[in-house]
Image (cartoon, rainbow, N blue to C red; front, side):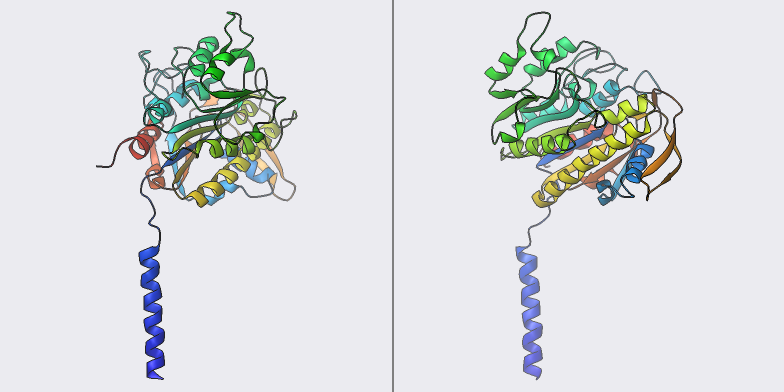
Length: 362
């Protein structure tokens, strides 16, 4: 009996030590970063979506949570351009600025740094690709209104995957430039809304889902578009053994806030959360990907005065048709996620990305 007990204990210790030896260590730095921006998404927008979804969101899976201070260099209330540029270059800048500092000087973005390091890069959005948030990662102009210039820069940016709206910025231009040809010459497969981006299995891709912005969920946008577009971008970018940087924007949470339309906010929030769920599922299997989810600002001064999980209904009120100055939440998962807890400036997100993805160890 003693020999049997000894054998059992020995076998347990042997198996345990083997598991320790052979267990794959968790990396302290990510190979990939997926950065999801819910434009205009404050705490109330999140809880509105949670309520309208019956009391839960995929976002609840994340336990590394912080708060970002959103102020721009010239205003207590930021716009999307300055907010996204803070993420992309790590400096506060003036409202309306795209990829430039507060003096108007172009600054290298985190996406451009990733490209220089040999990583693949991508932009996915539900709006025009030349709109403020995606533009801030791949262009440099003093005004977000200069969309023709933004399109030229984006066409020459080297971004490997671009999925969103805005075909008229690239093709039917007043200056006669055909930027679709520029994209094709760079090796990208260019597709419009009549073609299925899901069929592309490798290489570079530019897919335009409309001449301008894509419609809202309430106005008929495919409820699987953002999720499928994000997963397609990941599929293509992850074929690079060096890794990738991908920015995904849920653009129209913001527009629902501007319209003071609670149904618009809630449906777009739920759609964005479906994408979060799909991205997290992929990242958990991959094990080498940092996922960060935040907003550039809150929109609408939205408050919930009542609601029902059972009826999936909310009673919402708004204080403004513009943005507000409140902090916004930051959620993180994967290698380096602990760096995103606490309260900090929005620019710190860039610096954490740079330390984790760009700088060499030591």
